[in-house]
Image (cartoon, rainbow, N blue to C red; front, top):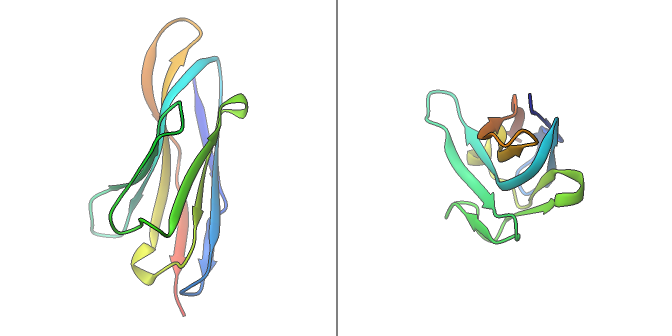
Length: 120
């Protein structure tokens, strides 16, 4: 089984910054795309950022210019640097990864999520 563990969430004032990390562990052969999603109470989960194995990135329009995602393939880790945070960025942030296991099976895995709260 693959486990994804997020860290770095917390409470921050508007305009502040947070850096989220997500480390994958398990019998991993390789990880293809990785990404970040978020979900606010009463709303559907939405894509925030995605990054390919070659570090090509895509961002939701609402975070372009403020958020940056990156990855360290040697560490099976993805990061989300969040700057100029707004109250609307509040939510539970989840990382995910498209993983090929050592036994050849490929599937999507999700972390448990980390709370990000942007408030004065």
